[in-house]
Length: 342
Image (cartoon, rainbow, N blue to C red):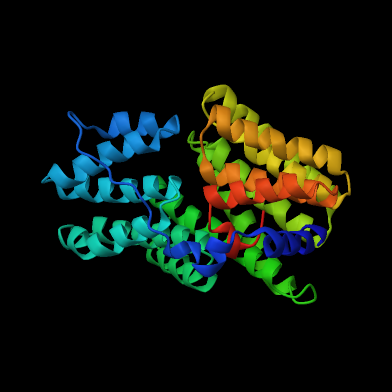
């Protein structure tokens, strides 16, 4: 994989000394949510949908610290953790989940207790994935999936959490394949493709029930595209990207504040890089950055796009520009240093 070799060189040459001397996962993450007047889940969700995660975190935090309703407390606990993840506050999110897990679950009865326990493991899986702790993340998502496996087809909300865990297992197997020697990837890529195809079937089932989620379904094709790029199947990748684009364009029509097309341009940039079309590759990475800055302020995706631009500039001999872009990417998302992929 051309991009992997270039990325290894880029990180080796340009990673900031501060990050190398002190792994970014140990950085102090400055952010403290505050109490707000008249907090509500509805307002928090509206803020979430518009990428205003610091504001939504305040609502979830206020509900979590003031409510006496066990279900409200559990839901705000999960949503606050997710908001911290969106803000790239991974260590804080993990600490918050682990510190409050027993207390939150102790006040719930079945089946709610099992459902929220699965959601805790799901969020821990997200965090450990982003922190590059792949085996721990696989354990987390497998635990969440197992907790819900018998109930997934009986309730759509449970089915969605089951699917999320299933999807992330596919992502993690993709990462294992990426990290392995090129001759030792087939087993993990097969597992990844199996998981993504199962998730597509779940979203088709939800669509038949009038509960479609075009964005989530589109991300299954996004990760299939990643796998097929890795395998060198460029024609199949183009088909994945077309399906992904179709689903994401529908999402943007319904929710103009969605930045999902930034992910389409990120992966199209990756494909063009593998095809040695560096001009088109950089243009798509730049468009991904624009969308994730102007439409949805999402630091993690901004970092991915910047790193893609840096790869192109590095290959084009624009060394200083590449260095600057790499350092900006690492500042936005330090986990890129040990996650190791775009």
